[in-house]
Amino acid sequence: MKITAIGVNAAFSTGDYQDCVSVEKASALFLKLYQDADSKQLSEADIRSQLQAISELRYQPRWHSNFLLEFDMPNKRGGETYRLLVDAGGDIRHALKAIDLTSADIDGVYISHPHADHIGGMEYLALTTLFNPYYTPNKKAWLGEQFIAEKLFLEQNLWTIPPASAKPDLFVHKKVLEPLKRAVGPGMDTVQGVPDVTIDTYFDVHTVGKQEDGTTTTHFFKDGEGRWKMTPIFAMHVISSSEEMPSYGISLEYSNGYTVLMPTDTQHMIPQQLVSHYRKANRIYMDCETSPFPTGVHPHISNLIHDMDADIQKKCLLYHYDQPPEIPDNMFYGILKAGDVHHYPD
Image (cartoon, rainbow, N blue to C red):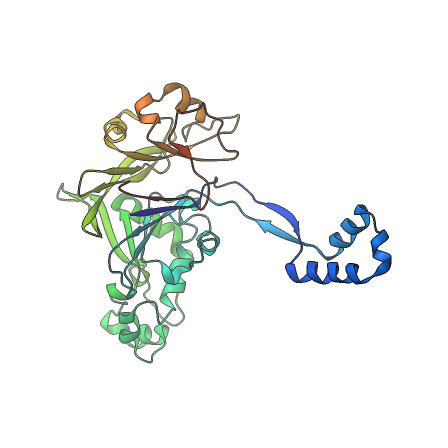
């Protein structure tokens, strides 16, 4: 399994603008200066002024705690790598663009909880894959020469929705599914001319976690000679006087027992019900706040430094909010930045 950190900043972070000059414009300017005898008398300030005149503002966004998991197994798209997003960020398009991918390269998404910074990219994933006739080979065969909205409209009496092999997977705890539907509904409940559109129109929905009969549903991903068992892990994220917002992280256990824990958004430090998961895990992707004013709904770096068990600290890859955390030497496994890649089992 390959895990790529495709965004490691907070929901409310904003990026920076920088003055940039394209290679073409810079080359033209310096060629002109080289050929112009008078330019040899230009000062550094003069050259800087000319560069400023042809520069453009470039926005460098910051993205939230999104991860891409890749498994060595056949996918729906006809390839040999299954790609799973863990949450969809405020806008997953840009995080995917940074690693040269689009929705056409994604096989599934896991949603931990329905906060906007974790589900903001769902409409993009849903609509772009729905209207992509080449998303999977079976999608193309199912559509034939028809446009997707036309097919759904003309065959609506047959309760036609795209087959499972023609749309991405959605893995979600059943307690998250209903609030997720409410949150994304306004943008996804309408397709031109089609009266009945649901989340199942866009995604092959897999509810994981505790079911009505008391059993816990997990999911397995093949990975080479072995396989990973994905189990949702409950943690409290936000709790008010009358409502609560849990976040369902995931435990990924390989055939040999090696375990990667991704708690997603959790409340202060480690709730007691999760201690056994933290002790069992070989690697932990741990969120942390670094601002001077802790919110209480995420672990703060001061808590992780002073209150976390030393053996657990050494397993943690920290992904942060605001500025990167300042940590003592040899205390944590490392600090993540966007684009970091890890392979498991290591």
